[in-house]
Image (cartoon, rainbow, N blue to C red; front, side, top):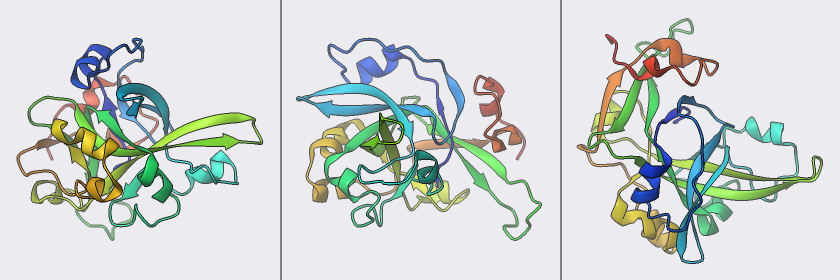
Length: 232
């Protein structure tokens, strides 16, 4: 699964790349350690144009009857491509809430010996080889928390089996979309969108080992050294 990423892009970066015509600039600081339940940026299609919104990373379906804290235990920040159309937690969002999640890069961990409970896995950082913003296929939902009388907008990224390049580190990867696929994902039929849930091409990403400081979700988000290459 993909449980950590970086958000280093600026408003100018995404305004031009996603054609956010008429959108009001939104300010947020860069983060080298975005974690589940953090607010993240999402691109939605509304009234024929793309809009930008910040929402909770960790999807809560509209029918959820328990607390927000209880939903966090289900690790709904990732939706598996193989079951996203049938799993109750995600199927409604797949039908009507497909969106785009821009990220600058993401982390995955490689275990040398998965059976060793004391081992600290080696984190690797993945980003686009061409330097562009990485666009991940995502889902979003609106949930009303009756206990707190508030409305929560939330999202999840879709993950799939890895290509050979990613498989050297991990057995899953996000569904990475190219620019010409954006409308097919957000506006296409469920069958058309499902065609995109596959590994990225072998030449799309690059990767390098990074500091194990990223192993902790409490590591400061403004620590730029988290993405610096270290000896594996």
